[in-house]
Length: 278
Image 1 (cartoon, rainbow, N blue to C red):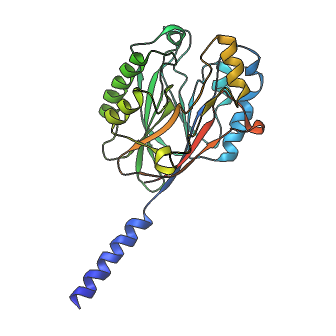
Image 2 (image 1 turned 135 degrees about the horizontal axis):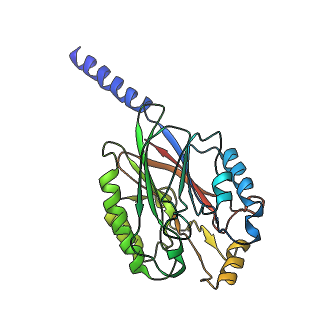
Image 3 (image 1 turned 180 degrees about the vertical axis):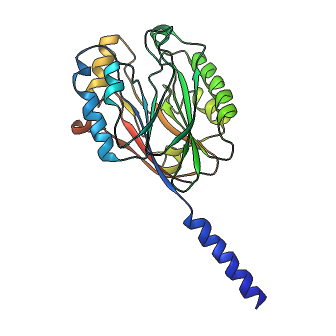
């Protein structure tokens, strides 16, 4: 009899814990918000409409540099938002923006010390928010955008800063999702350095086989990427440079590329939509 009661209690606890598990959909997307050129004429509004149709719970954007972008990348569907650092003393601000369906309780901002070349025109860094979910659980979301030029030492310095920043400001009782355009591929020296320093899991690798590269920037397939690379004399390449990482009591259930077909092409990057269980 006692054994039966014990098993019943254990089963109830298991069911209760399982029932309390909460799913969260997070979109990471570089909007290609360059404040120059004819590309800015229509893309933002179309992209925001597509995001609303996709209906993630949290949206992590980068390169929301221009005033028009800041106006267009907002929505009644996401009443809560947080931006990275403002422009002073650079030409533009950090360009990072977090949109959330759920209340943002805390918001902290980081500005990177080092930059290289044209990246120094933007006040790149990171912003971290603590979001309260409907179940009462909380989650830390960290958005960042690393240096885009070829010197890995600059990005490694930025990762060191990001590590210190996140460790200090995150709610230690809540899991953390790191999202952003990191401008390095999985075969770079920065990739294992970040995994080790931040103690994170790559959600793409957790939900895909090694033969699924998850390319988010393609000069071969994305005409915006190729046109802009030629116009700015930037490197022409294909690679996965946008990421969703996580740590803590959280699991990636699935992730897939979005906005990667001609009918939904609004940027030189593709987006990643990830679903997590907390």
